[in-house]
Image: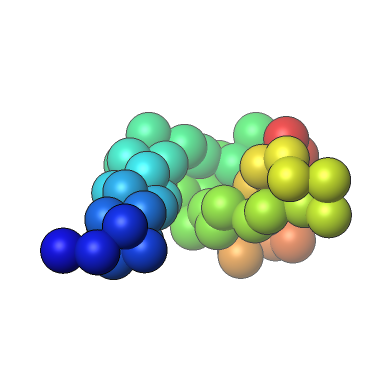
Length: 54
């Protein structure tokens, strides 16, 4: 496995962990996407209501 494949696998695992434990603070939905910001930070967006937070 190359370094990029390893990083991709780690990223997928991190995304799965986020989905397993995050609910939207606005509507309570578990439909949450992890988004990388311009400055490298991580934010979250609810795909059900559109609420975003970090």
